[in-house]
Structures are given as structure tokens and as C-alpha cells.
View 1 (cartoon, one colour):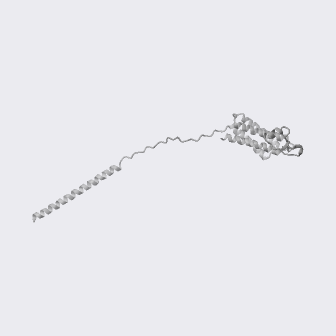
View 2: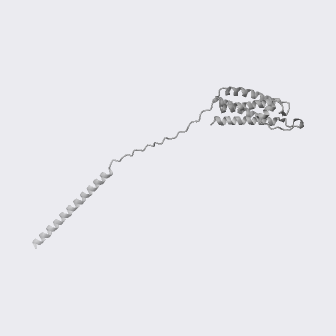
View 3: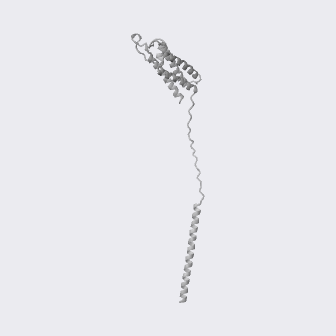
Length: 199
């Protein structure tokens, strides 16, 4: 009976020892796993090297600066255009064209040969020709196109002819129509010069 009790006590002690050893192994395994996890998460991060874009960025080409002399000439011509549209009298028109011609001639002398210079010169000449027509018919509303200067200017600017009775049929035109036709041509030359200058 005593021997049987001793065996029972020894079995219990052995069982306790086995449980204790098993628990220690489990704690060690958990500790090892934690160490592995820490090592994994604390790995040194790598920095990605940015890839350079080899395609060049296009740059806008700056527009050339207009010639100051051309700008000044067009300014004077636009003043003449405005004066013509206002309906000024012959004396005032004559005074304005003298000033405009002096300014434009000075500017044109500084310009290189080209379309801008050509258009500015043609615009100025149109305003001068309008003065000639106006002066030639100062006391009349009719421009005689069978005589100079009306004959050549009528052809140059394609001024439509009008009829004032059988005596002047096909040989005259209305002064107002003649002036407005010439001024319209001058304005077109100004527009063309401005367009070329700003391209």
C-alpha cells in the first residue's frame, strides 16, 4: 500500500515537471517569434531614385519688338483716319496732313525696305491724294475725271463715276464719293501694315 502511494506521488511530480518544461519552451518560442518580427519591421528603408525626364520642355518664342519708327508712323496715320471720319473741313484737313506727312516721312526714312514701309507709304500717299482731289474741287461738289488730277486718281483708286447731266456723263464723279473711296484705301493700307508689324 505504501509503495503504491509512493508511485502515485512520483507520477504526480513527474507530470508537474513535464508541464513546467513545456511552458518554458512555449515562452521561448514566443520570444523568438517576437525577435524575428522586430528584426523584420526595423529593416532599413530604401529611397527610390527619381527617374529624370529626358524630354526637353518647349519654350515659347518671344515676339519681335515692333520698330519704333513704324509704331510712330502708324500712330500719325490713325490720327488722320480719325480726322477724316469726323467730317472736318478742307482747311483743317490740309493743316493735319502737313503735320502727318512730316512725321510719317521722318519715320519712313528710318525703316528698312519691306512690306510695312510700303504699306505706310501708300497710306500716307492716299491721304495726300485726297487733299489734291479736295483742293481741285474746292468750289464744286464734282470731280472732273476727264482732266488731271481727277483722271489719274480716278483710275488709281477705282473711284466710281457718277453722272451730272449729259455734259459730264462718264467724265465726273461726286467729290464725297471720291474722298471716301480714297480714305477707305488708306485705311486698308494702315490695317495691312499693322497686321504685318504685329505678326
